[in-house]
Image (tube, rainbow, N blue to C red; front, side):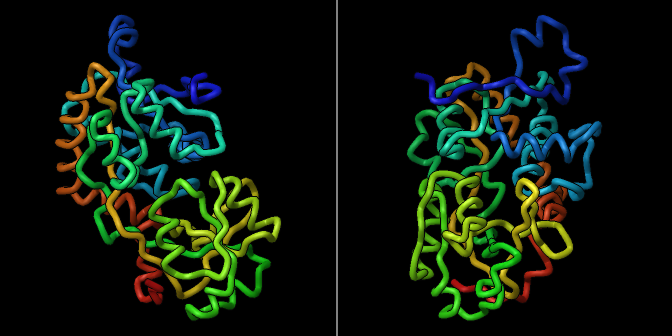
Length: 293
């Protein structure tokens, strides 16, 4: 059985509007993203052209969403003139791993969101790995909890935080390793982001790791439910994150070359850093916060 219930073509962007029907049918770069990212991307981009975007903040902006913009801009800057289509996969119990597997099978040309190098290295025979978009040491996250969890929100020191119950998706290797190193009294492992959030609101867990958000209080809205970071503490995740292209796709080598050339140009212009700052991922408000590891 195919690993997904559905791989749905959901949105066309970029140069598709000016391509010929033959080009659109025969040569199209398909960029895969996950269901929740796709939904927020639609809210974020609206009627704007992702290729000309220079302001990456605003409603629904977050790391995954701006990465979907950056990857399109990088391809364009690297010389791509083929049409682009964004495709999504419906929610699954383990969307991150299945998202990666879908690229390795060649069902899409490339991923629209970065993945950890530790997850991509074993797949080097199946994917072409880009230069890092998030370099080693740059990834910092908050410990997020529900707004009514007073015990968690009042925790400040590592011993206080270690008494809390943390939850993580078991396939998120750097997150698991980081939380295990912090020695929580209880660390629960589940299969997906949605499950993690659900466990917080069901009071089965207190905290989860999540990137800082661009909202004034750095809170995030998850399906109408609010999560907030524990104030004045942050966590560093080791490793770098990269885009990746399927070797199975006939255009893979060309796309990978254009992607890396474009990422270099975006890096030189400061647009990669700006996108992550605008999205709240590189967050100046947390610069002086106590890093727990």
